[in-house]
Length: 392
Image: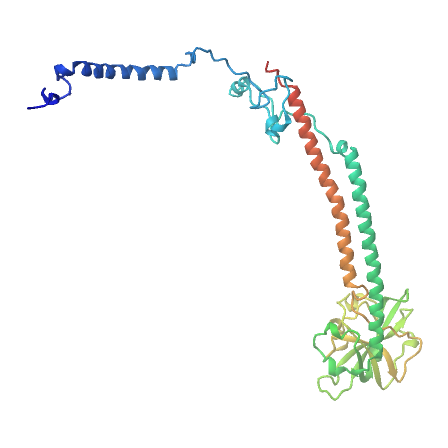
């Protein structure tokens, strides 16, 4: 015996089929629900896209336009904007009317400042900012710092001169105390001159060539302008490379510039001379561009064309001669390398102090420009707040 649940035959619920009699109420309710659901969706869609339909019985009022930004003005102080919102809180928005007017080519839109997105306002000048008490106090402070740095830099320059002079005196005493060495042992003819040989004391034997003697004009000695006496010495040596070569010798200094002065006569015969080595100078004027018997530089390259060769690339500053020369020619002090009169370490310290002083002045100028930009932004912000309409 079948249970009452399966007493009635099962039928399909497809379209066009009648529901069984026992389930008429259930089928009718399901069909009614299927008929209502589409209309409910339409209603929802209509309510969602209908802008005129009120929401839950309340009419939506248009929000007032706030030119200052997304933050509304405080009801206690209309038109004011709290500064806690930062810089963006003070940037005015674009009113609807202005947005519509921007699309109209016949409507002029007021220009804005692209740096701050504010309407052009008062510009604070550097002079106005520099006259504020804060910037004046900073200027005085930085000038004091720069003055102290400049004084320390000058003190380091003085120390550089003192220490350099002392080192030079010690170097000169060392050079004068050294024993002379044969010239060919330290420098060969037609070879490059090493800077380390400056001031080296050498000894050489040869014969002066009086017809080739020249005066090097415009040379100062003890504050007086005169001439150097430059004489070629034909060297006699056991070294085949040095024998017969020409060594320029500076025999001393005279106050005049007359090459025919009898006091400039050279010792005759073979002489033994000692002197300090010095490097050749750069080329000067051509021999035919200066008076006869004179020159303006001690250049081995130019002297090679006048005296012949081979020739040494440096010259000797005479200290002693055997036989002796005329006493009217003043002997010179040992030569020195350029830049040896100052202490390099103290020069570096002086440069550092001067850089620090300049940086102090630059820092004040930078602070002044930053303060001007900040003051200009504050003035533009204040102008925008005062011109904002009352949202009430």
